[in-house]
Image (cartoon, rainbow, N blue to C red; front, side, top):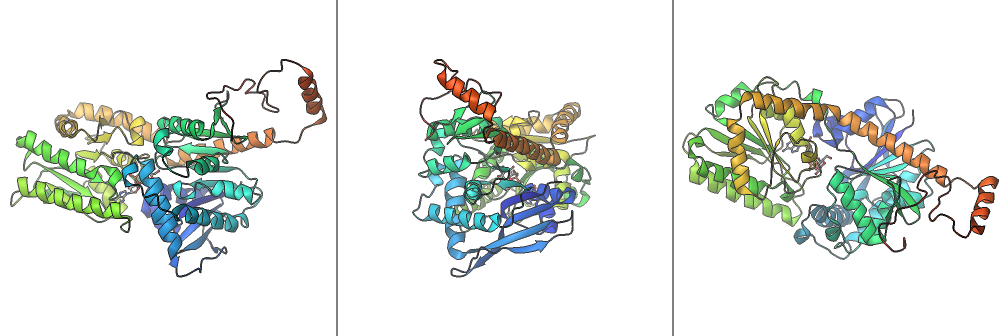
Length: 504
Ligand code: ADQ
């Protein structure tokens, strides 16, 4: 079985990864089934210029030959590559927040510097049969740098965050470099069809990429596949959720609405709090009977935009609690800490409504986890933002516009009065979707598509045989040879050119 080299910004101990949630869980699961190398940042920051190209390699107990290989960052790299370019340029722009982007000199150079250092170190560890799977926006240039270092293996890239509309992407000063780097992959995996359309449009606009008849994209004389692979969860690990008696009692039998998000401006938390406040005002009969529990652990606190959101939320929850609260009823429980996964699962189950209303989100796994934790005989109702990637799949959630406070307040009421029969019908359809594309299917389908795309590349790039040379010569003599005839393709005989212009 071929080894998978997983590359992500942050590498964790497998035991911790299984607890961390999201993709870390899927990566830890991969290790259980086949030999893997997980390569990336150790999470350590070293002073001065102390970062080297020599990774710390540790074998892990799982399929034979599996290991973790990590490198530290210097303080300057942490500032400019991680907090800077990754989280103050790419994250806000990709989440449609150009207003929060900080285009500072020096960020991009250091971002490239880390990617080049990672590529040098990783190139020494790659074996001829490995499949390389790079994750997320921190590492966009890594594939191209590996190719530069002579690596010919299949290289795929998966972006966990949304792709912005082309006009927004083009605002990044280095958009041309990013487009060139993206074009170097065999396969780019994205969360949704909307992301696929946005990325293709961006490659057309920025570097005159062309869409070929077989659906692949041609840019810089390279063909790449761009497809959606919506990230999933392992629903069986949430099915064990148990009703939390203590929790329910502590609310004096009030109905719970649960929100679980990292404290990030993309998650729409102020709008969610305002919608809940408006709901209490518009439907006063629910006062004292409903609480919103919001679990929002802080992240990236050294980035300025994250301090603002924290202050804004503290003020808002204080205001709403002050306005509506009673001695024995606090409407918003705002918890500024992370919760262990088992606990989260039980809280999801004890909550009549799951309230997930990001302004923009790659997928939003929490909404899938909420559904998978429900009691099939008496399930709760998810309210989901139309701008979360999950909305493309979870069409039986109550889909709302997170900018529309009125609509969100009404959705809370709709969920509260929904008959059990309808709740069960919706839950059954939602679970069918969640089960049919779980985290294992997600990883397997990405890897199979990557292998196929890389095979196609080597076939197209295969050296010319004498018979192909002869047909080429014949073609050259024909006055009206079909435009765009590609060797070895057997398809793409007439490339559809969507936009005029050269590849360069
Ligand atoms: P995140 O922005 O972190 O992930 P999300 O997908 O909701 O968003 O959560 C990832 C994981 O973290 C989930 O397993 C969840 O349980 C856990 N988590 C989130 N908030 C938590 C909390 N308050 N306490 C404890 N655990 C919490 C990024 C993208 C998403 C994309 C994922 C996966 O931003 O859009 O869905 O990657 O691709």
